Length: 196
Image (cartoon, rainbow, N blue to C red; front, top):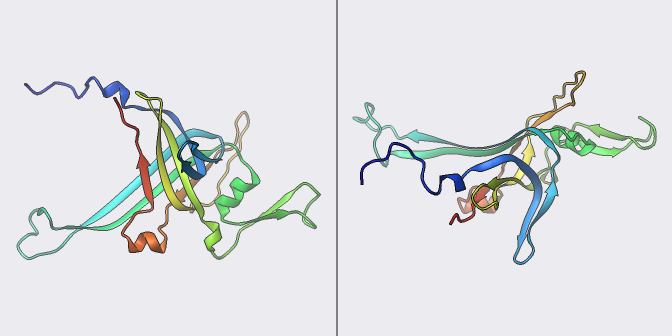
């Protein structure tokens, strides 16, 4: 067989991840029930999943002029979800600030909440997991990327203008548990359906 002039094949159109993804927190799977989770909120401008790895070449005399197979070690790996949230709630702002949320007493009228930044990060500040759920064109089944123990590290920035609605960019970073660290298991995974 000669080499083809395009990468397009019979399965190409079945392997597109299409349309905007949806973000969920606290995602679980149970046989028979399937996946469940809590919607993070409506987005605008899409969602970005980023998994980055950094490798280091071990320095050995006589090898500085080229890369040598087997001489690389993983130096770091990180995973983030960047979501542009348009559905702004008190909880959305609290997560952006990694702050506290309580009912207003003396600061404002009944029916208001007070959101405050805080200095220290506590274990309870990490959301157990966050998932980006996209749709695979060939199956209409979800492709699901799950990050464990996420924390919003981007802070809060919101701009307003006429004839528009505020969008907050949130960057959530995955964090390993001690058990994941001990097992050399990264705190993320991607679930991809079979394509016929």
